[in-house]
Image 1 (cartoon, helix red, strand yellow):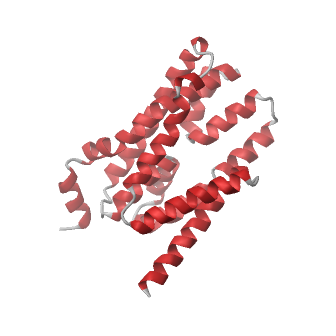
Image 2 (image 1 turned 60 degrees about the vertical axis):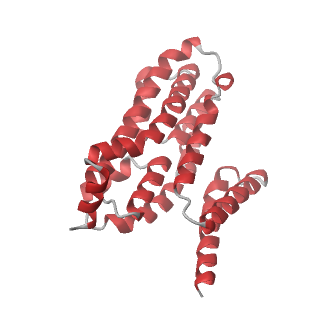
Length: 236
């Protein structure tokens, strides 16, 4: 029996498995997506542009940054350049997942890559590590996550007129809380805890030092290199 078939039997039907695994992401996307919709409405974006950004761009941090820059009246080139830098981390995520997708067709890779986010990347990393390579589950997780984000954006836009500010509601904490939950899911040993703590601390230091948008990317590269070095040293 193949690893994929075994994984499917262990987790039930592929779509049920996808629904279970995507639940933490959906719970985080609903409040954060709604906050994006509120901010987009208050920044003067139309409903069509707000929802289309969630459909076509589908990058939470980039969308929130773009809306803030739009509200500040910055020029389009500045917005494009900033969101490009913020999303450079997807290069690292793609490189990490690519070895598990060698047998996929090009159109499947394109569709999968289109809907990969930080959160779905974390879930897929855990799945692939345990041998669950079911394509239906992959696309189910991505699709359900994006649908929840689009619907939350839509609802948030309509609520924007009656919500003067999202900060008092504590919605801005939903995204960090979701990342913490996804990080805990990936902790398998002491080295993972060490690398996570080291990378998080380094990101804060780099941000305070003025690295701003590059802090997370640099901390991720340095932290991964540090973890690989420690692992190689301990094995020797």
